[in-house]
Length: 309
Image (cartoon, rainbow, N blue to C red):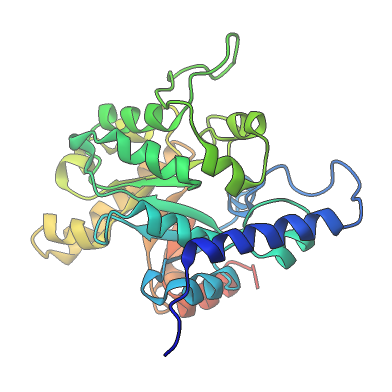
């Protein structure tokens, strides 16, 4: 009979391997490499197109290891239509840590940002989900069915810590409570550095956290310009599936809604996200979408089209 793997024991072993690898590494020159811990944030800051895949949680540890070696820039961890399971999230993220990759990069943590889609719609304001996901070490929040600027602002405030006196970006005032012990260990930084870096980009140019504001119905479309203008919003997402339902299956009206979201994001200087497949990813890149969500084949085609091969 095959023994069942113990996720927590494996997670501890992975952490020990990372620590040992870093301890034995030769000293590196200071101030080398990009400004950000997360490659995807640096890519967006540099104006690049980025690509991500849905987390393959059904495959367990092996799926996470495979994802750590993929060409994805980020992982879309879905708790809206999947289980709301913070332990599963935490265990999955542990298997993304790869000591060899950490040594090559010369930076702690994983080079696969994990953005968690919470189940609560914007109007439900269940902010504890945001706090809990971030405290496990997640690098961003994907917020479904945001309909108003007020809802977007609440999301931003829930992701931010209260800023120090005199901070240039003290507003919007943060609401997040202190207690990121697991996130500090997962990111591989000190508590003080985590607090400094765990802020929303691009409001904080050195921030590592991102939010994806999903526009999914007619109310969101009507308010999309005001939503995009909220300080601390990182990107908008034009959601083809839900917008298609909102417009009753009218393909032309749905496409116009998608383009409306793109125009609002572009006007606000924000990236815009959309799901895509290998057949339409090149068109979406030409249109101006900069955050693409799909499978491995889409990523391969998209990276080639974006000049990131």
